[in-house]
Amino acid sequence: MVDQCRRGHHHQRRHRRRGESEAKEEMSGGSDLPEEILIQILLKLPVKSLVRFRCVSKSWDSLITHPSFVSLHLRHAMAGHDRSVILLRHYSLTQRKERNTLYLDGESFLEHQELEFPLKTHDTYYLAGSCNGLLCFSDYIINNLQVVRLIYILGKNWSVIVPPEVEIYELKTNAWRGIQTAVPYVIPESSSQAFVNGAIHWIGYNPADRRLKVASSPRSIVVLFDMQDEVFGEMELPKGGDYANRLNLSLAVHQDLICLLHCHPMEEDGHQLYGVCWVWVMKEYGAADSWTKLFTINISEHGGIGRILGFRKKGDALLVTHNDELVSYDLRGQRISRLGLYGVARSFEVIPYMDCLILV
Image 1: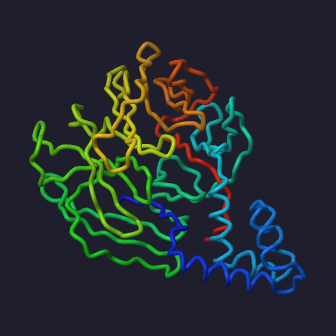
Image 2: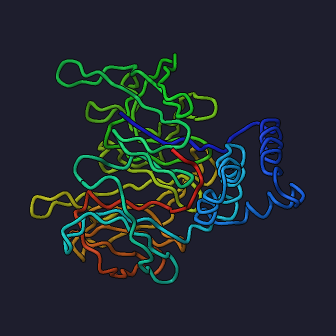
Image 3: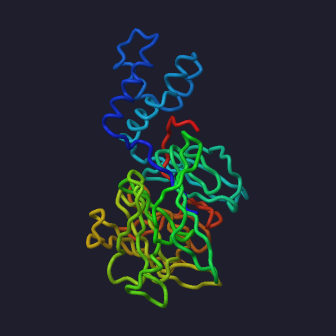
């Protein structure tokens, strides 16, 4: 199963105008302020303040929770979001518990606030995706509007049968609906995902594709699902690379561009580690010839890389090292900054944090 949150602010222009007028009508009741001024004031307020204002009266509760205003506030927040706060989830080896902590991502990496979280185990659930301040976990939905899942059936010798069943869950209807489309791709459950340009992206393959077949394994590609049009597609990986082992490939977002992390494995004490990782970005979305190698991460002399979690606001990479330590890696200066955080390597998740009004 592959789950991913859908961005909830893609609407047609006419729907936006209608939604804005509905919100204005709701918010003008009981106020002497012109409706446009009242809306502009409320849009500038933080989520915590708006949540408190819900207790003022039933009318204020109705206004602040109105879907049209929620959408307006989300778009306003997205426009001004500077990604200066990161949510770090990990199982701490020093405290022997799961921690969900906000960090201020400036020149330093400072702990800001501990969050209470509904999931208390790092073993059963894993993060499947995030967007617009919302998280989506496998087998546990705390989502905005939609979750998409692909269900594969295993055949003989554990082979994956295509096409899979494709279903979308809509929160507003609290129901799953199927998509009638033949999907030729296999997306491994271990594949990372990246949400760019209104589409979800995974590393996958087409089992019927025999081009450049290596070691009896179909070539690796980027599989995408456009959330607006609800169609699948594919993109080529950078030319010349050895992509036979998909476990060495992952996707991320680097400065709003889709990013490929291609790592070369090394063995140490029976654990899978990486000595070198290459960072590629697609500078022109959809154009395979625009893949550009930005950086090479090489910390083999420090014991190797366990995982690359993502990138900080200033561009540094967040890595988990061979000894389960979270570090910040300066890609240009090729320097490691120790953050003093240790945890189970597979429990680390880094998510851009943003407050939102969407109520589930």
